[in-house]
Image (cartoon, rainbow, N blue to C red; front, side, top):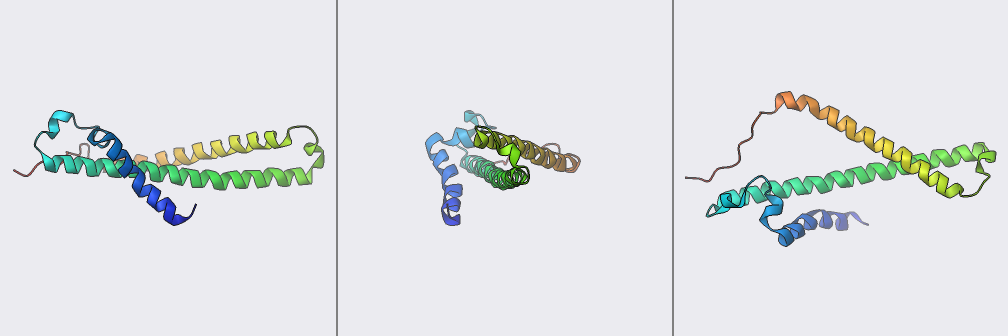
Length: 139
């Protein structure tokens, strides 16, 4: 898939979800009675929710790219090891065994990546404010 199509999907998918599900999908923090007659608050909540959903899709894309790279790396290493030790290649279902090992190693790598990102965000807890107030309508 080329970059242009990926970019279109990245932008269009959250917009499509908004069109299908409406305001409640993008505004889980605000109850429906908050939106009666307050256009500015609705637009601010929709914008905030749009960027949350856009970040979710970007994170999924980044994890998929990392997973693809790690799958290639682990499969190359395992096949090279088979080339050095041909007696390991004997036996049925070699492809299935290699695939299972590659999936397990890639999953372990992804867990490490997510754990390291979580650890990197821990210092932000001390730096960020404790409460972020929602936008208010102009009086």
